[in-house]
Image (spheres, rainbow, N blue to C red):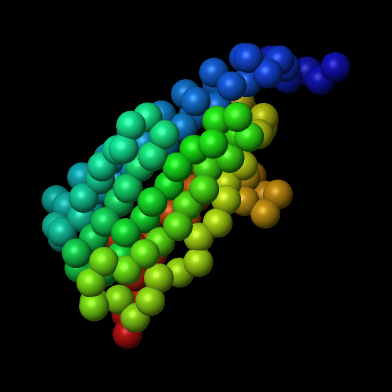
Length: 130
């Protein structure tokens, strides 16, 4: 057995959902900070399992939703107006046990909370200049 403090499915599921909720709070905080500087972004929740971030300036929307049974967060981007040349590809973040509890992983690489938020928000809030 691992030295991991969360070793059973029930405990992991609870910790994963708490990690998901924390992501939502941090995304909201990042959008609020962006709006104080530039404006035009919005954060919304569709129930407890989906977050959306849109930016009228970039013409993009992020939709991220959790699959609690499989411990995955799926994300996708879509155009919302003609300000964007196109939407980047989406992907999946898995939730696994890491050094300090539940962490997001992308392509089998652990992501810090900051790295996960940048992966999700940069295309919407900081699109490349054309």
